Length: 102
Image (cartoon, rainbow, N blue to C red; front, side):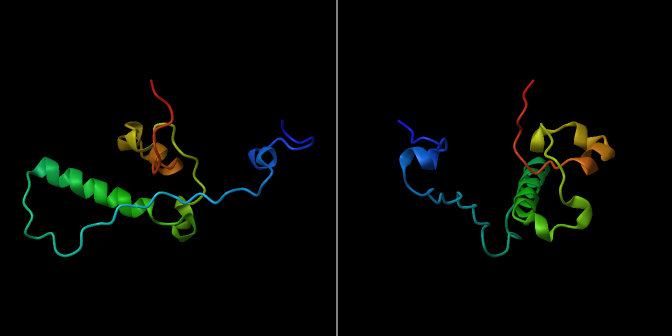
């Protein structure tokens, strides 16, 4: 039974909150990529993923003022509206996972 007045997980367990480590980000390969060859579609897919990963690692405090404090788009990185509506792309953050489906 939970202690009177406590309703949180830490109160129910009777101990301090536990520190949970964030998952490690994948490291980018070192060295030159000049010797790699790929078709246009695959090359753009890899570059798009690398740019997204680099942007995702920038702390909000280091972003330009115009990019700070944006609400996440429900469709996140899968948003199609952001590709053809610049006002939507500028108003919401798309550096997040999709939260709404359908």
